[in-house]
Image 1 (tube, one colour):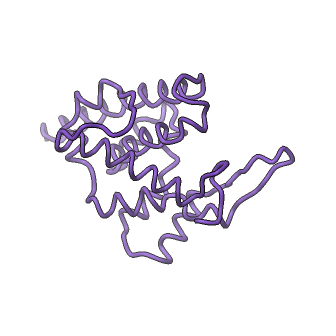
Image 2 (cartoon, rainbow, N blue to C red):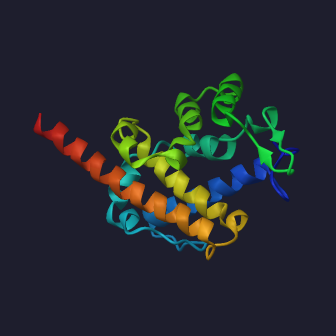
Amino acid sequence: MKECEQAKGQSVLDHGISVKNWTFDLINHLRNGDELKNEWILPDWVYENRDLILENLPSDKTLKYYTILHDCGKPYYLEIDELGKRHFPNHSEVSYRTFKNLFVNEVSARLIKDDMEIHLLKSEDVDKFCQNPYALTLLIVGLSEIHTNSEMFGGKDSDSFKIKLKRITQRGKKIIQKIKQNNENKRLY
């Protein structure tokens, strides 16, 4: 992971550590009121649903494994196209298998396997996504990953970052509404 570049000047390991740092920056802010260390653009649903988000996170140890090692399979599936652009096809599945061969943490393994779902999620698939017991974890880490990758997208003022942020903001709102609805339905039965 140290030897494989995720992006120009950043290894896959550096990327994982950065995702962990951003994720825990947000979690510690929500959990303890710690001042944010990073420059965030947070959707309203983050603060409005603070307790719901925090209640649905796995242990810190599991989150650390997941965030740092979520791309651990990328060095095995690196492809470079004719323009020199790096691609990692099916890296979530390869990362999942790689992690399972090295560690015993089923929740981290599942999160690694499902890591790309939040980034590829279509509006019509939100109901199915919300059946995943770790949907809110994937959402928060996805939000953190968009922020940690913002420079790669051209900065927080870039169209690319703004599009990704708008998408996760909209999906996050729908995900939280659906999870709240599911929780209410469970209470009624």
